[in-house]
Length: 405
Ligand SMILES: *Cc1c(COP(=O)(O)O)cnc(C)c1O
Image 1 (cartoon, rainbow, N blue to C red):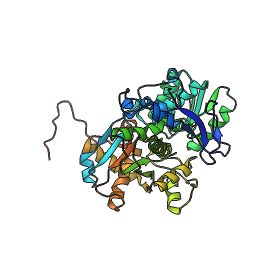
Image 2: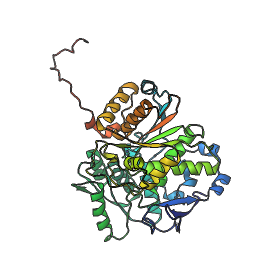
Image 3: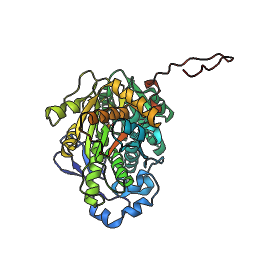
Image 4: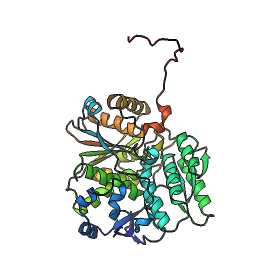
Protein backbone atom coordinates (compact mmCIF):
# COMPACT_ATOMS: atom_id res chain seq x y z
CA UNK A 1 0.00 0.00 0.00
CA UNK A 2 1.57 3.29 -1.12
CA UNK A 3 -1.16 5.59 0.29
CA UNK A 4 -3.82 4.94 2.94
CA UNK A 5 -5.97 7.84 1.69
CA UNK A 6 -9.62 7.01 2.37
CA UNK A 7 -11.76 10.12 1.74
CA UNK A 8 -12.06 13.88 2.20
CA UNK A 9 -13.94 15.64 5.04
CA UNK A 10 -15.50 19.11 5.08
CA UNK A 11 -13.49 21.03 7.71
CA UNK A 12 -16.70 22.54 9.11
CA UNK A 13 -19.47 19.95 8.76
CA UNK A 14 -17.38 16.72 8.49
CA UNK A 15 -19.48 15.76 5.42
CA UNK A 16 -17.59 13.14 3.35
CA UNK A 17 -16.32 13.64 -0.19
CA UNK A 18 -14.82 11.22 -2.73
CA UNK A 19 -11.04 11.63 -2.76
CA UNK A 20 -10.67 10.07 -6.22
CA UNK A 21 -12.50 12.91 -7.99
CA UNK A 22 -10.97 16.34 -8.55
CA UNK A 23 -12.36 18.41 -5.65
CA UNK A 24 -12.30 22.09 -4.69
CA UNK A 25 -13.85 23.45 -1.50
CA UNK A 26 -16.80 21.80 0.29
CA UNK A 27 -20.46 22.72 -0.24
CA UNK A 28 -20.07 24.95 2.82
CA UNK A 29 -17.32 26.84 0.95
CA UNK A 30 -14.54 25.76 3.32
CA UNK A 31 -11.41 23.58 2.89
CA UNK A 32 -11.62 19.82 2.50
CA UNK A 33 -9.27 17.73 4.65
CA UNK A 34 -7.71 14.44 3.47
CA UNK A 35 -8.37 11.45 5.74
CA UNK A 36 -6.41 8.20 5.91
CA UNK A 37 -6.93 4.73 7.33
CA UNK A 38 -4.45 5.37 10.13
CA UNK A 39 -5.06 1.98 11.77
CA UNK A 40 -3.90 0.32 8.59
CA UNK A 41 -0.86 2.63 8.45
CA UNK A 42 0.07 1.78 12.05
CA UNK A 43 -0.16 -1.93 11.21
CA UNK A 44 1.82 -1.76 7.98
CA UNK A 45 4.80 0.51 8.73
CA UNK A 46 7.04 1.30 11.71
CA UNK A 47 8.95 4.46 12.61
CA UNK A 48 12.17 2.49 12.14
CA UNK A 49 11.21 1.58 8.60
CA UNK A 50 10.44 5.22 7.82
CA UNK A 51 13.84 6.23 9.19
CA UNK A 52 15.51 3.92 6.66
CA UNK A 53 13.82 5.57 3.63
CA UNK A 54 15.37 8.27 1.39
CA UNK A 55 15.46 11.77 2.96
CA UNK A 56 12.50 13.36 1.14
CA UNK A 57 8.97 14.07 2.31
CA UNK A 58 7.83 11.00 0.36
CA UNK A 59 9.19 8.87 3.21
CA UNK A 60 5.72 9.50 4.74
CA UNK A 61 3.93 8.26 1.61
CA UNK A 62 1.34 6.19 3.51
CA UNK A 63 -0.08 9.45 4.93
CA UNK A 64 0.17 11.35 1.64
CA UNK A 65 -2.56 11.28 -1.04
CA UNK A 66 -0.70 9.88 -4.08
CA UNK A 67 -1.92 6.32 -4.64
CA UNK A 68 0.63 5.13 -7.21
CA UNK A 69 4.36 5.66 -6.69
CA UNK A 70 4.70 6.22 -10.47
CA UNK A 71 2.75 9.50 -10.16
CA UNK A 72 5.14 11.10 -7.65
CA UNK A 73 6.62 14.32 -9.04
CA UNK A 74 9.75 15.06 -7.02
CA UNK A 75 12.83 17.25 -7.05
CA UNK A 76 14.17 15.87 -3.77
CA UNK A 77 12.07 18.07 -1.44
CA UNK A 78 11.85 17.59 2.32
CA UNK A 79 13.92 16.52 5.33
CA UNK A 80 15.29 20.03 5.76
CA UNK A 81 17.60 20.50 8.75
CA UNK A 82 16.31 21.29 12.23
CA UNK A 83 19.20 23.51 13.23
CA UNK A 84 20.23 24.83 16.66
CA UNK A 85 20.88 28.60 16.87
CA UNK A 86 23.24 28.68 19.84
CA UNK A 87 24.53 32.26 19.78
CA UNK A 88 21.35 33.96 18.68
CA UNK A 89 19.27 31.80 21.02
CA UNK A 90 21.48 32.60 24.00
CA UNK A 91 21.37 36.31 23.15
CA UNK A 92 17.56 36.41 23.25
CA UNK A 93 17.30 34.16 26.31
CA UNK A 94 16.21 30.97 24.50
CA UNK A 95 19.17 28.58 24.56
CA UNK A 96 17.01 25.73 23.21
CA UNK A 97 15.90 27.64 20.10
CA UNK A 98 15.70 25.51 16.93
CA UNK A 99 15.09 26.51 13.32
CA UNK A 100 13.52 24.25 10.70
CA UNK A 101 15.29 25.67 7.66
CA UNK A 102 13.01 25.56 4.64
CA UNK A 103 15.36 27.78 2.69
CA UNK A 104 17.21 24.57 1.79
CA UNK A 105 14.56 23.06 -0.45
CA UNK A 106 13.93 23.20 -4.23
CA UNK A 107 12.71 26.72 -5.18
CA UNK A 108 14.08 28.09 -1.86
CA UNK A 109 10.76 28.16 -0.01
CA UNK A 110 8.57 25.64 1.78
CA UNK A 111 5.97 26.14 -0.94
CA UNK A 112 7.84 23.30 -2.69
CA UNK A 113 6.23 20.85 -0.26
CA UNK A 114 2.69 21.85 -1.15
CA UNK A 115 3.55 21.99 -4.83
CA UNK A 116 5.22 18.56 -4.93
CA UNK A 117 2.25 16.81 -3.33
CA UNK A 118 -0.44 18.99 -4.94
CA UNK A 119 0.98 18.66 -8.46
CA UNK A 120 1.56 14.91 -8.06
CA UNK A 121 -2.03 14.31 -7.00
CA UNK A 122 -3.46 16.64 -9.69
CA UNK A 123 -1.44 14.69 -12.29
CA UNK A 124 -2.69 11.41 -10.86
CA UNK A 125 -6.31 12.59 -11.12
CA UNK A 126 -5.90 13.57 -14.78
CA UNK A 127 -5.70 17.36 -14.44
CA UNK A 128 -3.79 18.88 -17.39
CA UNK A 129 -3.29 22.45 -16.14
CA UNK A 130 -3.08 24.20 -12.77
CA UNK A 131 -3.89 27.87 -12.11
CA UNK A 132 -3.34 29.99 -9.02
CA UNK A 133 -3.00 33.46 -7.54
CA UNK A 134 0.14 33.82 -5.40
CA UNK A 135 2.31 36.19 -3.40
CA UNK A 136 5.23 34.77 -5.40
CA UNK A 137 6.77 31.71 -3.78
CA UNK A 138 3.79 29.40 -4.26
CA UNK A 139 3.53 30.37 -7.92
CA UNK A 140 7.24 29.77 -8.42
CA UNK A 141 7.01 26.36 -6.78
CA UNK A 142 3.86 25.24 -8.64
CA UNK A 143 5.31 26.46 -11.94
CA UNK A 144 8.46 24.45 -11.25
CA UNK A 145 6.67 21.24 -10.29
CA UNK A 146 4.09 21.63 -13.08
CA UNK A 147 6.98 21.74 -15.55
CA UNK A 148 8.41 18.62 -13.96
CA UNK A 149 5.03 16.88 -14.33
CA UNK A 150 4.39 18.15 -17.87
CA UNK A 151 1.30 20.14 -16.79
CA UNK A 152 0.31 23.61 -18.03
CA UNK A 153 0.44 26.34 -15.42
CA UNK A 154 -1.22 29.76 -15.14
CA UNK A 155 0.05 32.12 -12.40
CA UNK A 156 -1.13 35.61 -11.39
CA UNK A 157 0.78 37.59 -8.75
CA UNK A 158 0.90 41.15 -7.38
CA UNK A 159 3.38 43.31 -9.26
CA UNK A 160 5.08 43.94 -5.89
CA UNK A 161 5.86 40.24 -5.24
CA UNK A 162 9.58 39.34 -5.01
CA UNK A 163 10.93 39.64 -8.55
CA UNK A 164 12.89 36.36 -8.43
CA UNK A 165 9.57 34.50 -8.22
CA UNK A 166 8.54 35.96 -11.62
CA UNK A 167 11.81 34.79 -13.06
CA UNK A 168 11.18 31.29 -11.74
CA UNK A 169 7.72 31.20 -13.36
CA UNK A 170 9.08 32.39 -16.72
CA UNK A 171 12.01 29.96 -16.55
CA UNK A 172 9.57 27.06 -16.02
CA UNK A 173 7.46 28.11 -18.99
CA UNK A 174 4.38 29.11 -16.98
CA UNK A 175 1.80 31.59 -18.28
CA UNK A 176 2.41 34.54 -15.94
CA UNK A 177 0.37 37.69 -15.23
CA UNK A 178 1.25 40.56 -12.91
CA UNK A 179 -1.59 42.39 -11.17
CA UNK A 180 -1.57 45.92 -9.85
CA UNK A 181 -3.18 44.85 -6.58
CA UNK A 182 -3.05 42.21 -3.82
CA UNK A 183 -3.34 38.41 -3.87
CA UNK A 184 -7.15 38.59 -3.62
CA UNK A 185 -7.27 40.66 -6.83
CA UNK A 186 -5.06 38.08 -8.56
CA UNK A 187 -7.45 35.40 -7.28
CA UNK A 188 -10.48 36.97 -8.98
CA UNK A 189 -8.67 37.02 -12.33
CA UNK A 190 -7.58 33.39 -12.03
CA UNK A 191 -11.02 32.23 -10.97
CA UNK A 192 -12.63 33.90 -13.99
CA UNK A 193 -10.04 32.48 -16.41
CA UNK A 194 -10.22 28.87 -15.17
CA UNK A 195 -13.96 28.67 -15.85
CA UNK A 196 -13.34 28.74 -19.60
CA UNK A 197 -10.37 26.35 -19.74
CA UNK A 198 -10.98 22.64 -19.81
CA UNK A 199 -8.60 20.36 -17.93
CA UNK A 200 -7.48 23.19 -15.66
CA UNK A 201 -7.87 23.09 -11.91
CA UNK A 202 -7.80 26.16 -9.67
CA UNK A 203 -5.29 25.39 -6.93
CA UNK A 204 -5.51 28.55 -4.76
CA UNK A 205 -4.58 28.22 -1.09
CA UNK A 206 -6.87 25.66 0.57
CA UNK A 207 -9.16 25.52 -2.49
CA UNK A 208 -7.78 22.08 -3.27
CA UNK A 209 -7.08 19.55 -0.50
CA UNK A 210 -3.53 18.34 -1.21
CA UNK A 211 -1.21 21.34 -0.83
CA UNK A 212 -2.00 21.09 2.88
CA UNK A 213 -0.88 17.45 2.86
CA UNK A 214 2.52 18.47 1.50
CA UNK A 215 2.94 21.17 4.10
CA UNK A 216 1.93 18.91 6.99
CA UNK A 217 5.13 16.93 6.40
CA UNK A 218 6.98 19.71 8.28
CA UNK A 219 5.21 18.42 11.39
CA UNK A 220 6.16 14.79 10.66
CA UNK A 221 9.78 15.81 10.11
CA UNK A 222 10.00 17.86 13.32
CA UNK A 223 8.68 14.84 15.25
CA UNK A 224 11.09 12.42 13.57
CA UNK A 225 14.08 14.75 13.89
CA UNK A 226 13.46 15.12 17.64
CA UNK A 227 13.30 11.33 18.11
CA UNK A 228 9.50 11.13 17.71
CA UNK A 229 8.43 13.82 20.12
CA UNK A 230 7.31 17.43 19.87
CA UNK A 231 9.04 20.60 21.12
CA UNK A 232 7.31 22.87 23.66
CA UNK A 233 6.41 25.54 21.11
CA UNK A 234 6.25 25.78 17.28
CA UNK A 235 6.29 29.27 15.73
CA UNK A 236 5.02 29.90 12.20
CA UNK A 237 4.77 32.98 9.92
CA UNK A 238 1.10 32.98 9.00
CA UNK A 239 -0.36 34.19 5.71
CA UNK A 240 -2.97 31.73 4.50
CA UNK A 241 -1.98 29.58 7.46
CA UNK A 242 -1.53 26.34 5.51
CA UNK A 243 1.72 25.43 7.26
CA UNK A 244 0.24 25.88 10.73
CA UNK A 245 -2.97 24.03 9.89
CA UNK A 246 -0.82 21.29 8.34
CA UNK A 247 1.47 20.94 11.35
CA UNK A 248 -1.59 20.76 13.63
CA UNK A 249 -3.05 18.03 11.38
CA UNK A 250 0.27 16.16 11.42
CA UNK A 251 0.40 16.22 15.22
CA UNK A 252 -3.11 14.79 15.49
CA UNK A 253 -2.33 12.05 12.95
CA UNK A 254 0.95 11.22 14.71
CA UNK A 255 -0.88 10.89 18.02
CA UNK A 256 -3.54 8.66 16.46
CA UNK A 257 -0.77 6.53 14.95
CA UNK A 258 0.79 6.26 18.42
CA UNK A 259 4.09 7.55 17.07
CA UNK A 260 4.37 10.49 19.51
CA UNK A 261 3.08 11.00 23.06
CA UNK A 262 0.18 13.13 24.28
CA UNK A 263 2.15 16.32 24.74
CA UNK A 264 0.93 19.07 22.41
CA UNK A 265 3.27 21.85 21.36
CA UNK A 266 1.84 25.36 21.68
CA UNK A 267 1.29 26.68 18.16
CA UNK A 268 2.11 30.36 17.61
CA UNK A 269 0.84 32.29 14.56
CA UNK A 270 3.08 35.24 13.68
CA UNK A 271 1.96 38.07 11.41
CA UNK A 272 3.31 41.50 10.44
CA UNK A 273 1.72 44.59 11.98
CA UNK A 274 0.97 45.74 8.42
CA UNK A 275 -1.23 42.68 7.79
CA UNK A 276 -2.49 41.07 10.99
CA UNK A 277 -6.10 39.89 10.50
CA UNK A 278 -5.61 36.65 12.43
CA UNK A 279 -3.89 38.38 15.35
CA UNK A 280 -6.79 40.85 15.55
CA UNK A 281 -9.33 38.02 15.53
CA UNK A 282 -7.34 36.14 18.17
CA UNK A 283 -7.22 39.18 20.43
CA UNK A 284 -10.92 39.96 20.05
CA UNK A 285 -11.97 36.36 20.66
CA UNK A 286 -13.50 36.01 17.18
CA UNK A 287 -13.70 32.66 15.37
CA UNK A 288 -13.01 34.15 11.93
CA UNK A 289 -10.99 37.17 10.80
CA UNK A 290 -12.11 40.38 9.11
CA UNK A 291 -10.37 41.53 5.89
CA UNK A 292 -7.34 43.65 6.90
CA UNK A 293 -7.40 47.08 5.21
CA UNK A 294 -4.39 48.50 3.28
CA UNK A 295 -2.27 45.42 3.90
CA UNK A 296 1.46 46.00 3.47
CA UNK A 297 4.66 44.43 4.86
CA UNK A 298 8.19 43.57 3.64
CA UNK A 299 7.35 39.99 4.67
CA UNK A 300 5.49 39.64 1.39
CA UNK A 301 4.62 35.96 1.75
CA UNK A 302 2.37 36.73 4.72
CA UNK A 303 0.46 39.59 3.07
CA UNK A 304 -2.89 37.79 3.14
CA UNK A 305 -5.67 40.20 4.24
CA UNK A 306 -8.29 37.43 4.56
CA UNK A 307 -7.47 33.73 4.70
CA UNK A 308 -9.98 31.00 3.75
CA UNK A 309 -8.63 28.81 6.58
CA UNK A 310 -8.54 31.55 9.25
CA UNK A 311 -10.94 29.63 11.52
CA UNK A 312 -8.69 26.56 11.40
CA UNK A 313 -5.62 28.63 12.38
CA UNK A 314 -7.50 30.28 15.26
CA UNK A 315 -8.79 26.92 16.46
CA UNK A 316 -5.30 25.36 16.39
CA UNK A 317 -3.73 28.29 18.25
CA UNK A 318 -6.41 28.28 20.96
CA UNK A 319 -6.67 24.49 21.35
CA UNK A 320 -2.91 24.17 21.90
CA UNK A 321 -2.69 27.13 24.34
CA UNK A 322 -0.60 28.98 21.78
CA UNK A 323 -0.92 32.61 20.80
CA UNK A 324 -0.97 35.00 17.85
CA UNK A 325 1.36 37.99 17.68
CA UNK A 326 2.20 40.75 15.20
CA UNK A 327 5.65 42.33 14.77
CA UNK A 328 6.80 45.47 12.94
CA UNK A 329 8.79 45.47 9.71
CA UNK A 330 11.62 47.34 11.48
CA UNK A 331 11.82 44.64 14.17
CA UNK A 332 11.80 41.72 11.75
CA UNK A 333 14.45 43.29 9.51
CA UNK A 334 16.65 43.87 12.56
CA UNK A 335 16.32 40.20 13.58
CA UNK A 336 17.09 39.03 10.03
CA UNK A 337 20.51 40.67 10.32
CA UNK A 338 21.04 39.78 13.96
CA UNK A 339 20.55 36.07 13.23
CA UNK A 340 22.71 36.05 10.10
CA UNK A 341 25.59 37.69 11.93
CA UNK A 342 25.22 35.61 15.11
CA UNK A 343 24.74 32.16 13.63
CA UNK A 344 25.33 32.41 9.88
CA UNK A 345 21.73 31.85 8.83
CA UNK A 346 20.39 34.27 6.20
CA UNK A 347 16.65 33.71 6.47
CA UNK A 348 13.63 35.20 4.69
CA UNK A 349 11.72 38.17 6.18
CA UNK A 350 8.78 35.89 7.06
CA UNK A 351 11.08 33.63 9.11
CA UNK A 352 12.64 36.75 10.62
CA UNK A 353 9.16 37.84 11.75
CA UNK A 354 9.09 34.66 13.86
CA UNK A 355 12.48 35.51 15.37
CA UNK A 356 11.22 38.99 16.32
CA UNK A 357 8.12 37.33 17.79
CA UNK A 358 10.01 34.82 19.95
CA UNK A 359 12.29 37.59 21.20
CA UNK A 360 9.23 39.61 22.26
CA UNK A 361 7.46 36.59 23.74
CA UNK A 362 10.57 35.86 25.82
CA UNK A 363 10.75 39.48 26.99
CA UNK A 364 7.07 39.44 28.01
CA UNK A 365 7.57 36.15 29.89
CA UNK A 366 5.17 34.17 27.65
CA UNK A 367 8.17 32.00 26.73
CA UNK A 368 10.48 30.75 29.47
CA UNK A 369 14.23 30.30 29.15
CA UNK A 370 13.85 26.52 29.40
CA UNK A 371 11.34 26.23 26.53
CA UNK A 372 12.35 24.27 23.47
CA UNK A 373 11.08 26.44 20.64
CA UNK A 374 11.07 25.43 16.96
CA UNK A 375 10.76 28.31 14.48
CA UNK A 376 9.82 27.68 10.86
CA UNK A 377 12.08 29.61 8.53
CA UNK A 378 9.88 29.30 5.48
CA UNK A 379 12.38 30.46 2.85
CA UNK A 380 15.90 31.48 1.91
CA UNK A 381 17.11 35.02 2.50
CA UNK A 382 18.70 34.71 -0.94
CA UNK A 383 15.26 35.15 -2.52
CA UNK A 384 14.98 38.67 -1.00
CA UNK A 385 18.34 40.34 -1.72
CA UNK A 386 16.86 43.85 -1.46
CA UNK A 387 15.96 43.48 2.23
CA UNK A 388 19.55 44.10 3.36
CA UNK A 389 21.01 47.42 2.21
CA UNK A 390 24.66 47.19 1.17
CA UNK A 391 26.54 50.42 1.72
CA UNK A 392 30.25 49.82 1.07
CA UNK A 393 32.86 51.79 -0.78
CA UNK A 394 34.49 50.72 -4.05
CA UNK A 395 38.27 50.92 -3.87
CA UNK A 396 40.47 52.02 -6.76
CA UNK A 397 42.61 49.14 -8.13
CA UNK A 398 45.74 50.63 -6.58
CA UNK A 399 43.89 51.55 -3.37
CA UNK A 400 44.35 50.23 0.13
CA UNK A 401 42.01 48.63 2.66
CA UNK A 402 41.83 50.95 5.69
CA UNK A 403 43.35 49.73 8.98
CA UNK A 404 40.77 48.38 11.44
CA UNK A 405 39.32 51.15 13.61
C1 LIG B 1 3.61 31.60 1.63
C2 LIG B 1 4.65 31.95 2.60
C3 LIG B 1 4.36 32.03 3.97
C4 LIG B 1 2.96 31.86 4.51
O1 LIG B 1 2.46 30.59 4.26
P1 LIG B 1 0.92 30.28 4.48
O2 LIG B 1 0.82 28.83 4.34
O3 LIG B 1 0.18 31.04 3.43
O4 LIG B 1 0.58 30.76 5.84
C5 LIG B 1 5.40 32.27 4.84
N1 LIG B 1 6.66 32.45 4.39
C6 LIG B 1 6.98 32.39 3.09
C7 LIG B 1 8.40 32.60 2.68
C8 LIG B 1 5.99 32.14 2.15
O5 LIG B 1 6.31 32.07 0.86
